[in-house]
Length: 200
Image 1 (cartoon, rainbow, N blue to C red):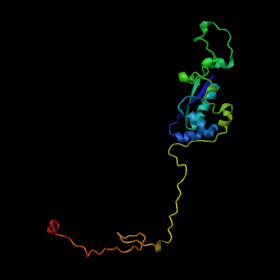
Image 2 (image 1 turned 90 degrees about the horizontal axis):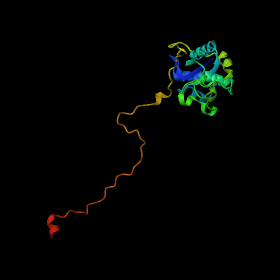
Image 3 (image 1 turned 30 degrees about the vertical axis):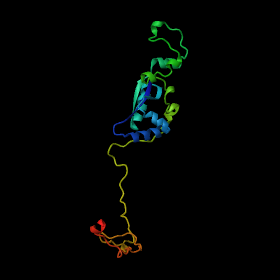
Image 4 (image 1 turned 180 degrees about the vertical axis):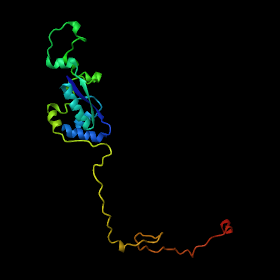
């Protein structure tokens, strides 16, 4: 069995904003889910797929500007999914000691490998992914395609310009105010004493 893993990568020729918009419309996801999808950490989009189904989903994501990876599911994870209480097995057949479920519920935090079931991570589409992908009509044009023909904008219309004039350079165009005249005090009764008068 295979699983489809997304690591937040965009297809060549697709910018991040376009890929995010396509993902939100494709998976009917919330803003928080989209942020987690494009955080850079591996996110399991769908699991328990045969190789043909996984490649089909990968092609759909690529068409919408997202790079996904088809990876084989972990044998231990698939075994635990079908048989939660494993029977006694010879020690030579087990590569590592069997640990409690609480210690292995989320191994991706320590290894970063996307070999875990999606229950501990983001479940973007869930069981409805088939209907979502089948009903999608989104598509991407090749790079350089004009999406909308440019239209001719009408020239701007300026009214009442005939009543406007330009003042000469240096003119004071502020508001004129009536200011009182400067008052010059009467100093006719004042005089200056010479140096000899000061000595006396």
